[in-house]
Image (cartoon, rainbow, N blue to C red; front, side):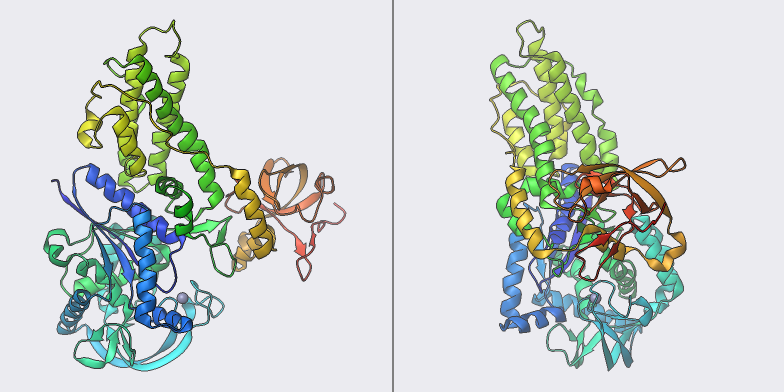
Length: 604
Ligand SMILES: [Zn+2]
């Protein structure tokens, strides 16, 4: 065994069933865990659930069943999610476990001994959704930035942790610890501005872990939750701590970048090596939320599609930023990439190898596979880029078959060509095994090799090859679309443009760049019942732009053509239905949004 690699996901609240963001994070962690195992490292991969949060209690009360029963039920769904995603985790922690409470209390006692915990009166704004206090300044329009709910005012005698004491050390730690840069800078800015001591107890709470020697208090759930990364190792703590990689969503960056290292410093634990903060999955540029009716249930997806298809569709998303995700994207990625590219290559070559046989030769084709580059992407957590690189090589292999035509009678060296392709498929399957393990396994059985670093580096042994079964079924996108249409009309009457407008931060008005442009082309977008693809001429300095706009309901194509409109030109481009939309049209709407008015430019 090589060096140890300890990797964790965040532990999820079980106040509701899992959403696709949970599946995203877990799949990222699993791909990285599998990659490090492939490198023959001694990997420990921990995931689990946070059962001690107050919001679990409140969610349980709404359903009328006991907290314990409610939690068991939802935790069951998270366990099912891990199983259906084919995760390779070594343990699954539930924070209501006794062993966990013991470790939490041990650490808190150490902090008390250090003199880092004191009692004082706390008055503040508390968001139950986040399980945290906010200052007025943190709020957006008086509401929690994560939940858009108004936090409640609380005043109580409480225990505090001397977070401020660790400011200097934190400023030193964070630059090497937090990635990507944007998340690092966010927390550095906040630590530099002000780092206040934090309240770490809840007086009179019934649910959670007792504060040591203080019966009336429970430990603030975030302290308890963070310590799962140590308690989850159980008797393997000395072997695997410190963590090599924590993976969390951007909404809980602060807790992991700042509070967690400070707690560890205070209780004399070694610090984790890296924190990878990922973005959220959006649906057509909108945050997924229950009120918008655009959430995606990962268990539903996994009931409908094989785990590898779901995994692949998620891992193709850029994890550093917010990414668009939808079932349609899953279908596109399945049909265009998995079925058409990988599936076709494997089925074609295995069939040809079955009928013609293979003969060992030096594989010149594989020189076009840049393994170094793929490894680099893995080390930088750029999983989507690693996939792109592998699929580039799949394209090269497909072209190679097409050019060499090993099925034609007149082709010389058929068996050698098929060997080169089979050996290349071996490399592809081994490299893809972190992403789509089941499929890689199937391929390894067809071409007779092992998923291992040794087999990646040595040439394929010649053996009898039998035609592979079909790896990926194509999914009929039309069927799915008709269903989606129904859902769209039921839950979402707002047009894209209106919602987009509300996302612009108008406090930054001086940055907004509005231009007059003329619509030169109006086209339908396949599968979009609200959107048009518009080509807009903005004159010499900018030229042409492509914009997707939700105007179909309000304007016929002819009514739009040649119309002059006002365009926001300096917005970040967004992918909509596979098209890069490079701006947004300014429009007015009437009160009930049944009408959109574009002719704001008057006589121009
Ligand atoms: Zn909140």
